[in-house]
Amino acid sequence: MANKLSLITKGFFKENPTFVLVLGMCPTLATTTSAMNGLEMGLATMFVLILSNIVISLIAPVVPDKVHIPVYIVVIATFVTLLELLMKAYTPDVYKTLGLFIPLIVVNCIILGRAEAFASKNGVLDSALDGIGIGLGFTMSLTVIGIVREILGSGAVFGWKFMPGDGALAFVMAPGAFLVLGYLLVLFNKIAKKN
Amino acid sequence: MVLCLFAVCLVCAAVLGGVYVLTEEPIKAAAEAEARAAIAKVLPEGGEISEELSSDAEGILAYYVQNNGDAVSAYAVKSVTGGFGGPPSIMVGVLPDGSVFNTSVLSHSETPGLGAKCTEDKFLSQWKGYKGTFTVGKDGDVDAITASTITSRAYAKAVKQAVDMVLSLGGEQHSDAVSGASLNKKEE
Image 1 (spheres, rainbow over the protein chains, first blue to last red):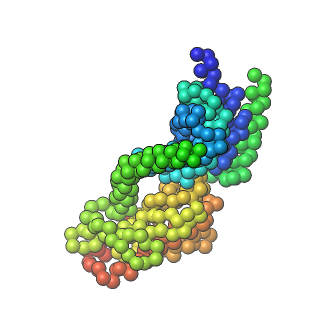
Image 2 (cartoon, rainbow over the protein chains, first blue to last red):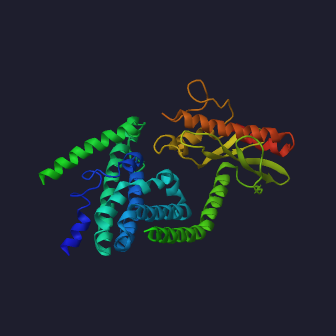
């Protein structure tokens, strides 16, 4: 049981996709302009990650080695498109803010990375838990980056403004994304090393 | 090998096709509800809204006429123009005298946190009852969104297109009740 639990918790610290594995930087940098955007992107990615992990762990034994990458990509792309259609139909408001970045989940290397490194070698349950763990870790990281950027860049948290004016706009733009990510990476690894 | 890839693609295509069919209606309904909500937001209350009408004017996707009794009381115009991230489409409520009643964003692909602020009240409120030169920035009468001048200009252009289209229609559909309604608006 402890083993199963560690599959979930490792995503937060030991194998945190953003701050330790440093995977999936494209959506990380692009969508974390606010805490809410980061959270929604993290959840969307987690949805795809869990489902693709499950399916890939099921089909991995029968997929020939030579075509495993194309097969995985097709599976992942299917889930992303599915997510896009469902969001358009049932949560048009969320789709409006994230729409541009949803298709980008296909090329998120966390998802292909987990498929290659974990789901293709492990059972269905373990792969699903791995998806939940890594997904939660990714969601947490994106939300934290989003919170920091929103506070510095817009003077607000989750859309709630506590400061008048615009804040340091650079933090909402690309340079701020790199700055915040860099400093959080250092901070995270300092804390992780101490423990 | 080939067979495996083929089978996977086949299954995926089938799943996607199924979901597409299932979500087609809700997506359309959501878009329709959104359009109706946007029309209600940009027009004065009351009156009957017509079916979607099409126009040849540049950048005008469609427009709706609001009738109050026999008179035309306002127009809702769906206008599109090039933004920073892609063409944003907006709904503009225009009174027959060419003044803007209100505007609302239908869809856009502007940068979240920057150009996407065009959906916030701070930017949108200045369009309520707007009548001016549609110039953005220091010399103009439209306040731009900070660091998103391109988005702001695109927005102003889209509104102008809508107003121009309504003015070009104006000649055909004039009535006294209409000018009365627009006078009230100006006093605000």
